Length: 112
Length: 113
Image: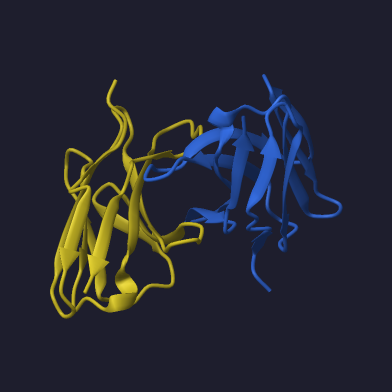
């Protein structure tokens, strides 16, 4: 049973560029959340998607946007990249009868 | 004041030692408490979660919640080199339209053989 899969695993972008990160949730899960983890810090909540709608959002600017598809997979888009956006981006999924979030291995984004 | 505070370490112990990892939190309404383990270059992996106060044991791991002092702990008995990782405490902020994890900064643990 595949867990949460994220792609790509690593990415290097230049300031001002745009990036799209992808996530496939664990089988049976319908809710996808995105987190940003800076080096040496705990993950910070970006937003959550359920039934293709953004259900809640953390303290991140509008440059961060997302989407959920009918098959529950999700994308995270970041526009106008800043050096400070360099981080590990984690996708987490959950389903009915919540039993904790399952995290993917993340996408490490480096902005130069 | 941060919602969740965690001593970042690093913590280095010899194999076989008992490890104590701790966090404090600010909001007394929180009810669900979790511990995640994160190996280098990997995503967090749920170790244990507890609801409200009390202890929960799973093998060598014991999670403890003291709601009166807003203190959560993870104890690792007979620590092994394979336990070397970053340990993250997390609280589920749940209610209404809210359903998100609030993490501590993580404690880096190294168990020396």
